[in-house]
Image 1: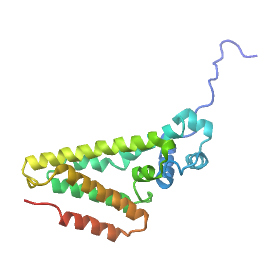
Image 2 (image 1 turned 135 degrees about the horizontal axis):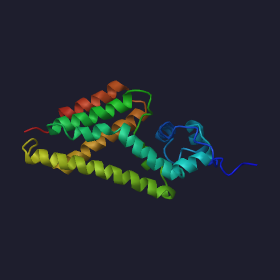
Image 3 (image 1 turned 120 degrees about the vertical axis):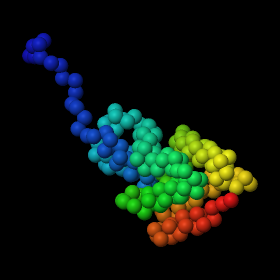
Length: 203
């Protein structure tokens, strides 16, 4: 019988790194989309049991939201830094080349996690779709504001509509992800970047 002086055991410590497990979950979601990723696939990739997943991350939906946070932090950091470029053209090129790097560099899945999840989600996953839309709206707003500033500074022609130009840039970026997932080569994606920049409005 244990004495009162002996420490009370409060359960076994975690035997996995939550950051590594989340990174593994991100790869599954990025490849399969939210609804395409099963709990069995997630737990296998993360190297944990379902109870451990629930205890550390919550349910599958909560895990996806955390994976989106990681995706934005590690994969889309170039989008924030692009806004600091000195010209609108440089902003756009930084965004496009950052997208090109994601689609052609390393071993990450091709295509955009947000696009995959929005296309694949049914009405049963409205909260996921809403989160992706809200995050995209935030990125869109930042780019529109940066292009509005560029027009005010004379960096863009007065007749250019910043919101329309921002939508165009974002559409090209998303299109690059879709084409990459369909098998487009790095050279073909590079041509998209070059063509877009060749069409960039100038004074």
